[in-house]
Image 1 (cartoon, one colour):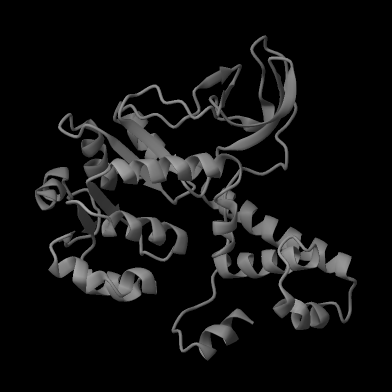
Image 2: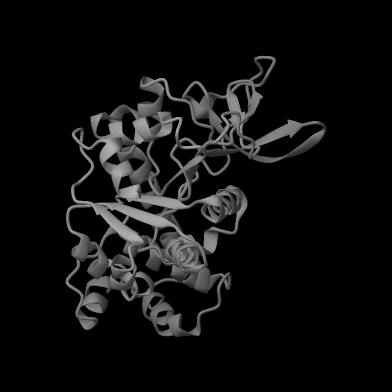
Length: 314
């Protein structure tokens, strides 16, 4: 069905797991009236011709969850590395001339965290409340001027039912010892296993945007918005300007009064612009001709240096 749609739009692209997850979650949301979408009725009728609506809901829910599990397993900590291509990013974090740096990623993996750990570079991720083997999200940062945000979640973020200060409820946390399924409290007591049984990551295309105002994602995106408000430089690496909500924040950052600079690390400046969604694509040439947009014409590799990026910042 996705392939047929893309062909109808004259799009030369192959359906991927994000597309399938998006369709599955749309069907579930329509069946449960979480997001009413009358346009889905013909599809619901087609897919319930040989099954009940409740069976269909369970199937699409399991399908989307299965995709999450496959993504988590492919990005497992055992698959970490190599890290040499991140040298320029590590050096940027180390640069004392940069007063305030917020690193925002859409990736779910732990490659950045491991690279910083190996390089002995400190960043704060907002999980600063120690509770036994867990580090609970409290939106506090213990390394001044160095934040790490993961706008689509992380394979080491989980939800736990905990009792804190006499209150029992769900908390987002990560396991400091790398064992989220066998967490222990401050007195060594065994804690309940993670709720959901899956880490907190966002898969699917546009349905991600619906999750941005919820739970820990709301805090992450607030901090991202806050960082953009304060920033005079935005360095873009590995982002194709395809997320409509992230694009909207970038456009708002670019278009407000004041001097700022965006540096894109990529060998094909024109190709990035053509591949961006319309909100960015229609402004790309103007930004480039106006001097706001500059490029480091290469992929991020071990040979890329922070100095080459900083030169384009000006």
